Length: 127
Image (cartoon, rainbow, N blue to C red):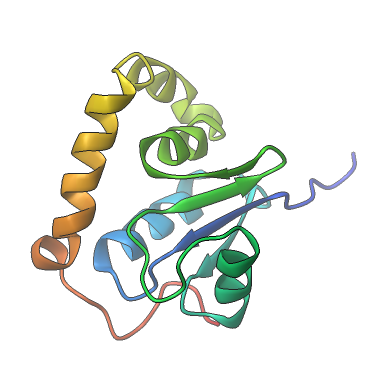
């Protein structure tokens, strides 16, 4: 059987405790070679942000870059979750919630993530 190649890149805030927690969860539950993780603060993260036209000074969403291009906010999160076999059904059910509502909740959490979960001096991923 041929080994899967990493095709999906997740860019996240390496100083955000919530983001680091989500990455830790993905490392535990996602198939091993499904995602490549890079903090936006890393040279690769900065390069990808520039290449796709995102700001490089801060990040207010996790970004999934797959074969179809970048996905952000609730669409990106649901696409990430949908790629994990054990959680595909959960993502499918959540996708029925209108995007306006999903993104509204996502943006509230994003704006408050440091206040609610704190900032980390270390990142889940070494870069």
